[in-house]
Figure 1 (cartoon, one colour):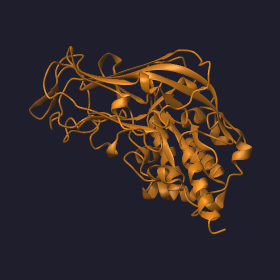
Figure 2 (cartoon, one colour):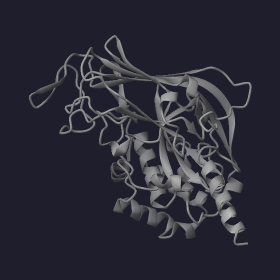
Figure 3 (tube, helix red, strand yellow):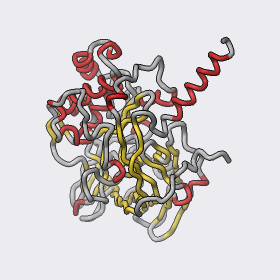
Figure 4 (tube, helix red, strand yellow):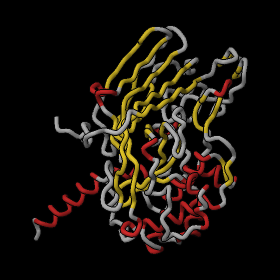
Length: 396
């Protein structure tokens, strides 16, 4: 027995870690499609600190609802019309335990303008099915998988340790959420409470002149909680924050595309929380809010939580609004970072047409020139004919 117990513990640990990338049990992948994707960043201004810092994109390449083909993945840096750097997946280290690839590229310190960073590749994306009856029987774990630790902690925009948010969680599910109900029931109740009285205030995107996308319109969980509303991105922040405050791993998902829409040139923000014996449960609080989740019974199936038939329309890119706590986010939240363009200026930077000044320094000149601009696109390539196995986890 003394030999079998450690072996059994190791076996359970391996199973728990495997769920970090693929769902199982009551949560399953359903339809799959192949999609080409493009994520371009156009930059018109060097940061005040110069170009010494690398541009950082913490990419989701082997997640529960998507799998990027390494052979298709490339990232290019252009300085005007000159290709300054091109890197492919084989030049990066393998993804971490949750399937995130740490991509960093060197930025030119001088040369032509604008600078352009182009990320492109092909991904398999999945929709999801969820059996809530079975999932509701799953008990709280003794401990969560170690790799979920970062998704339990407070971070910029997801202030799960804020006293007001912690008090709201306590008022909703008590001082000991584990005694209130199953982890699924607690998660649903907290998401429901976040959505119930939320007032949306417009687009979740930030725009510049000519409706050019700059990034995400997000102010965070505390700002949304105090205001009683905000953007759909803020609602995701609040939902993720209350889940973390209750001791459930959760994370935002910044993706290309849009659920329940044919729009392919958009960014979408949704969420995921971790459930033992199942994996990462996808949920879209804005979809749930619009479908009246505030008055729904917890025992009912909620389309948009776990059961997400349109999830395969999305290509997840990031699990963070800004890597490294956002301290190097350039000028707006968009999942990537380089260096703070103007550390003393308000963030995100205000954009007006014409000339933008910070003190005596001109940051932007010209009607259509922005600090940065995004161009995103997905294109469906149909359904694969054979099952897909992750090449990221293949033995060398």
